[in-house]
Length: 77
Image 1 (cartoon, rainbow, N blue to C red):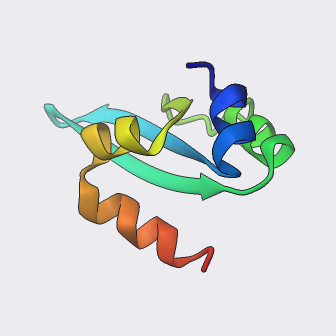
Image 2: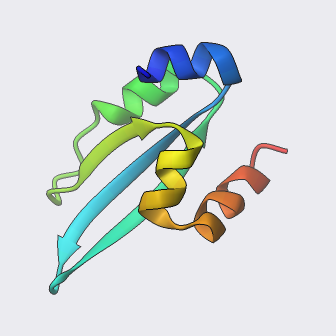
């Protein structure tokens, strides 16, 4: 499913910023309720070689862990 279809269906989209450092991946999860701000975040460069993706909650949980996604959900309640 494309991320804009997921957003239209659920009203939110998850962004994951990943960086490989010191032999392991570090992930940061964000949640967006506005598709324009999510796409702006996706296209912003941080100058530290991070990879950014927009994805569903299920995929974010697989990548970041369920606890990290729950913490991000608490910010929008």
